[in-house]
Length: 196
Image 1 (spheres, rainbow, N blue to C red):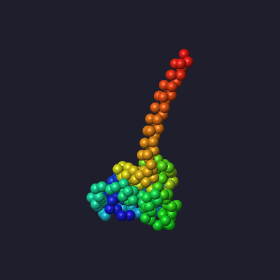
Image 2: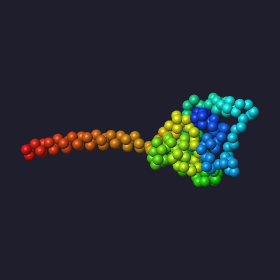
Image 3: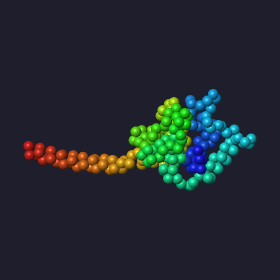
Image 4: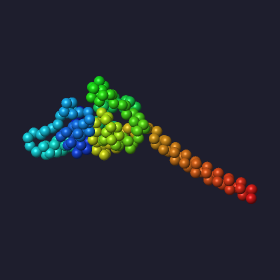
């Protein structure tokens, strides 16, 4: 993938771990091992201090990354390689057969995932899919907290466009029930007053 935004969207510790050992950083040890190695090989260094070389690579990625990215761009760079977002007419940029070969299945469309799974589930799933779905082929994404929030905000905007309207209706319904309860109580008091 193009790494021009990697320094902005991925957590720096994740990037360092990914460079050193992709299988472990992505949490896909159950899928890749010595007999079936991960497509991205480990970086063993250029002969100097490995930690310093990795830190230099991460610093370089951060230095070339744009200062700001909108939510859609973060989603595109972090998720669109594998996932479609049909509600916003975004299709995966990877060949479906290649995805199926790597993942074992074609990754799902994310258009309504926010409504199907919810914000809390996705917050955990993005950076630790094995915790929510043990054995899944989806790798850990490793987004920074800001980028993760941007991805979820974008998914919410696309997949739950009526959220604000629904929440507004909820407040109106509560106000209506409160007024109705007060009127019913006043009516009850009036009726019982006449009975006594």
